[in-house]
Image 1: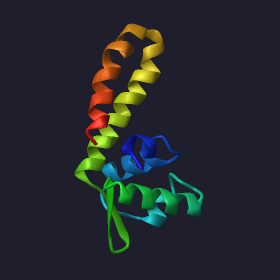
Image 2: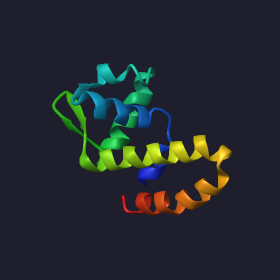
Image 3: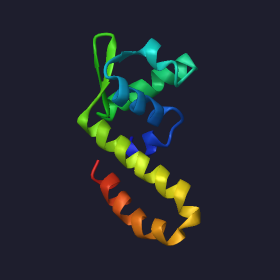
Image 4: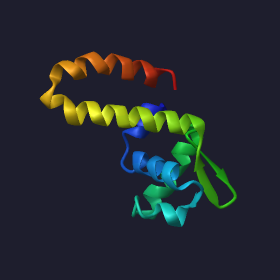
Length: 104
């Protein structure tokens, strides 16, 4: 599954953001951002399979590639949140962000 598709799923960006800010965390710690245990388990598996996080024993941590993906996701959020006020900016920035996503 592509990183872009994974990042579009509920809770994925929040998991990456929490891991980026807090370092190594257990799945119980991550349940703060994804309440449903089954959804959390699936998201963690998808993120690990994509190489965006890694599991060491009971702990998960973000990888370098996960950090890049998180940065890109934040860029996309900014474009879509700010862009309605500045449509020209979004048209200018979107190709750059899309190009960065395609390298994942």
